[in-house]
Image 1 (cartoon, helix red, strand yellow):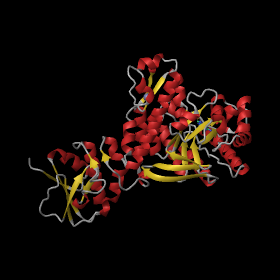
Image 2: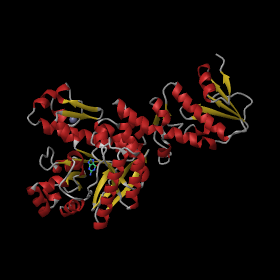
Image 3: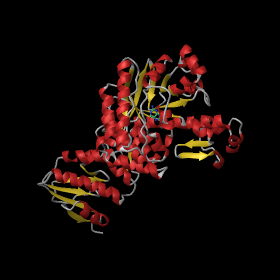
Image 4: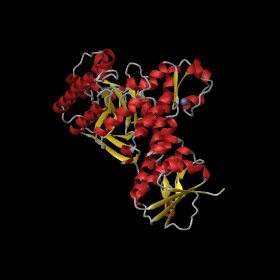
Length: 483
Ligand code: GUN
Ligand code: ZN
């Protein structure tokens, strides 16, 4: 195996990393554009100039065309495509899922992929459609695992990708992840998610990706098969996906669609080209619409936007602001918001890997209260040393008669004044307090009280919060401010 993956920076479960395949480096998160040799709207050489370090093409298409097959076998894939970065080949599984059958078996596609010099080869896994029942999903997964094992046995030295399948069944996804982990594969695509994305089933997408990740090793590079729309990259990266492949840039261009990070627009609906890329700054919307070169120009724009989002995500991970980016992106469509809320449903798993300190924490509404940093704070609150009589003071002022006086910052909760400058208390920015964040802060008071059952607790707050505090912290005395 000559695929290695090194994690360099982390945020949530997302990472900036370095994938190395056959001496070629790929910075991750990465986008692998899908190259169709028959209709290259943007050439691989141009892609290289745009900073693209890896691409994906379909071995099945190469194998079926006499001309391309012979050339690829004679000259190698890199020469035929004119690209010296990493090239991954897909097996034909996607065609299998669309057409129901393919005229190639597992061994033949793997041999062919190696013969044409692919850097990452993919077995003939079976993408189970989301409406398949459990029995079918289990059966498909069984065949997929057999084929991965066969690939591993036949070609132990190959750069083999280990696809994770299992339909929409979380336990099967986890089992599938564990099975490829046990084979020691360091590059694992999560498959059969295209129909989920096409139908905006982001909640299911989040469930299956989180389940697959539970089974996979954290040291594995995770590719989300067929994910090419930039509006969901941040969400997927937050779950620990490292690579994407995009046919969307070209498919959308063919349909006259202009990709933005908030969704796509029909070129006919555009009065302006709201994008800083070369294409959009060199012409008007009307000129683009009427251009003979329209499809190619749209593809270039779509690719630029997609790559820029990847850069923005890498930057966010390095700054520790990935949650803010996920929050922003997931508000562009209600179904993405469903996916985001699904991710926030159980952040305990994510909290374990989330960095202890970040550059900043911006409060952006109720969802923020469920972020990993809040959960982490509530988990470590019991470590605060306390006297016998404890006051949590919302406005920071003291009252005689208490051994310990703590300040209060929602959505975190109580904190000793000496922590005022440390993360997250010192680096968090909130608007005027709202009920959600005060309730979350009260959960912090509860966590402190549960850890100190013998002590007396009082909360001093303005009248407007007295009701909420009584509801959330029934065991504490509530001291109102006199108005
Ligand atoms: N492309 C999109 N989804 C899939 C998948 O599940 N398997 C393979 N091999 N390719 C894909
Ligand atoms: Zn543009």
